[in-house]
Length: 213
Length: 229
Length: 51
Image (cartoon, rainbow over all chains, first blue to last red; front, side, top):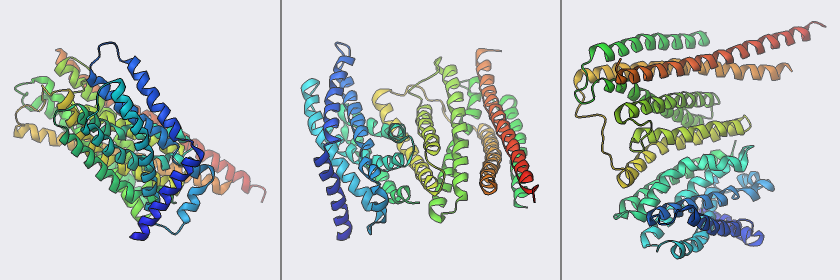
């Protein structure tokens, strides 16, 4: 088991180091999420309620995640690393978990900018929003990694990922918006946790089949 | 031998579907008493709900075949899973259309976000349409079979999760004012409903087996062409 | 017919129309398959002829 954890840590570390060196994705995600919030300010008519802004925060998060996910297998694909990775003597699900960890790190960094910016531009952010964002990150990364691997195997590539991902992101948006605006955020947070759990088990078990013949 | 048996299966399903569809429609229109609250318009229930349940059955059947594929790695399950999802999408479209008509009768509008079943089918329709895009975009082979199977499995997890999500969103944004089912189904209503459900399931079975034969034929011809050329 | 009856009948007709549309698409597929079979058998015949 400790070997499994070491594999996961090594794979996640590789992705983070690669990103630190090339700076391909993270700056784009940060710039995108702030630009999106500014666009949202102008897309809300004067005098709109704060509740509508809460919905827009979740749109910004989902689309920023999409941006990061569509690049998540770019290095592997361009240098044909995925086949080598699959042949490496580690559990294939460790590849999935390593990717999930690195994507969660990128998402958390993007949100570390997005949430203060949102609080500055629109309305204060409570603890329940932060909790919902943290839970949503796990779900987005878990499902998104499998779908990104699928999209990477297709001809349509980046074009396909949003089409695959958005229907699966609808429950995340429901849970996130609910936790942000409802009086009793508990049930929405529990729902996000349920989503994470169910899809994490499924993704963990099935990722192997997506990357192998 | 096996081909002729399979065709017989499709023929048996088609005959059963013909019989049950006629019986179900006749019973729904001429025999079963009208609903006390909703009157004649409630009869669309005997079409809409069986079609919706059949669509779920197709999606679950497709996921089951997908699971068998990943389990046994037998290539034939790929086409079976694909065909089941194909049928599920056809019945899903029918659910959206009939549900939309029901919304029009009941509330005078073609679409209502308060109608949970409809919203769920819209999400599923989007999800399974992406299944087709995925299939057409990956080179045929064992890799595509695996990817399609995993996606089909995501579908059956998405169904209950979306169902819950819509319930949660409904309590938050769109309080449910109307309920369709009314008080309780009487025994005669339930009987007619069962006949109609059996009819749509038989129809789906017949379409599924025919479509499967067609897709297998297509596949066999493609292999043959490669062998000859 | 009352409006209600019209809509209920319409729903049944929509289902019928979609199933018939499926039959049309299926027959198109079937005719394509038939054409491919005849092409293939033609191909096999011409390949065998010189021997």
